[in-house]
Image 1 (cartoon, rainbow, N blue to C red):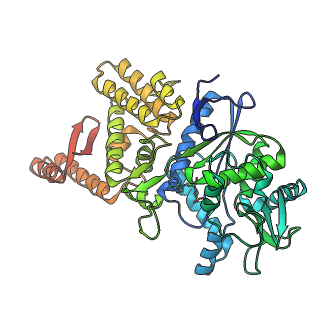
Image 2: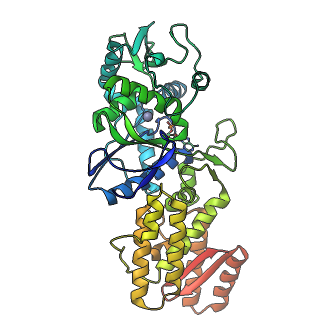
Image 3: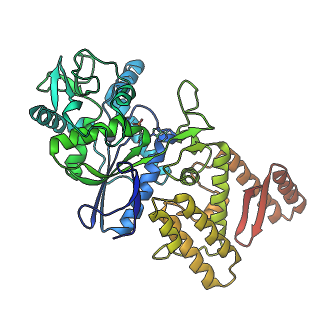
Length: 458
Ligand code: AMP
Ligand code: ZN
C-alpha cells in the first residue's frame, strides 16, 4: 500500500487509496464547457488534480488521466447565436485558450482529452442500453432516465428526494414520469446542433457524455473521479446512475471534490461583475504565483481569492526562490523529504506542504557549507516539483526578466533596477542611490549580491 489517503465524497471519510488494478491508476476529471475563457474558479480543479496526478505518478508505474472537453451545451449555442459565429469556431478557440491558460499555471495536459461531440455514438449506445434495461424511456422526442428505477439513487450527494428535485432546478416537464427524472437526449430544432438518433435528430443531455467517455477510456470501473463540489449534484449523481444501471458494475471507487472559490468574499458571478479570468490574472502575477495562491488553501476548503492573498503568494514564492539562489546549480533530490510527502499523502494537504517548503528555505538561508546548501536546495526543489512549483531558474526569478505574466508594476521596477545598474557602472552613485530611495518610497526593497540585484515588496 502506498500510504496515500484521500477523502471520498461517497463514504464521507478519508480512506486509504488502493488502485483497483495494481500498478495502474485511472482517473477522470470533468473538464471545462468551452464557451468562455477559464476563470480562476475553473483553474482550481485543474491545479488540484494536477498535484494529485503528479503525486500518483511518483507512487505508481502507470497513471491514466482523462479530462474531457464539453463542446456541446446550450450555453455554447447561446454564445454562437449572440455573436453570430459558428459553434465550432467558438469551441475550438476557447479550447485553445484554455490550454494556454492552464499551461501558464503549470498544469500538465491530461493523457486523454476527449471531446463530447466526438463521442455521440457511444452516448447513443449507452442510452439504448438503458432503455432496453428499463432504466430510461422515450417521451416527446426526449429520452429520460427513470430515477425510481434505481433504488440507491442519491448515494453520492446524500440528498433527500425533495432536495434533489428542488436542487435540479429544472422545470418539471409534462413528459416526465417522475419529477426527478433527468434528460439523456433531447430534440434539436434545425438551428441547433444535432445528430441523428433512434429518437430523431437531437443532442445529448449534459451528464451522459462523462459516463460514455470514462467508459471508453478507463473502463466500467475506475479509481478516481473528480471535479468541483458543485458537480456532486446533479452531475455526478446522474453519472453514477447512468453508468451503474447500464454496466452493472460499480462506477468510480473514489470521488474527490474541490471546494468553491469566491472573490473577495463574494460568489463569482456575471451579475456582480467579479469574474476573474485566468488570463487577466496572468497580467498581474506569474502563473506560478497564481498556482501557489490556489494551493495555499486545502483543496476541500472554500478559497477566498483576494488581492492580498495573491500578493502574499508572490512574496512567499519570492522568498523560496531567494533561498534557492544560495545554490543556483542544485539539482532536485531523487525524493522529497518525508515531511512534505507525508503532508501530500494525507489527502493533499498542500498548505502544510508549503509550510515545510518555508522551513527548508529557512534552513537554506542559514546554511554556510556548500554541501549543506546543495542538499537543502535539492530537497526544496524536489518538494516544489511534487506540487509543480519552483521549476524556474532562481536567478531569473529574482530579476523577473522574461517572466511571462510579470505585471506592469514589476516591469517598471525591473527597468528602474536596470537604470540603477547603469548608473553604478558609470560611477554615478548619487543617481543609483536616488533610484534605490525612489523604489523604497514605493515599498520596494532592493538587495545587492554578487549575483545581481533582487527586489521584494516591503
Ligand atoms: P464548467 O466549465 O462550469 O463546467 O466548470 C469546470 C470546472 O470548474 C468544474 O469542475 C467546476 O466544478 C469547477 N468550478 C467552476 N466554478 C468554480 C469555483 N468558483 N470554484 C471552484 N471550482 C469551480
Ligand atoms: Zn462530467
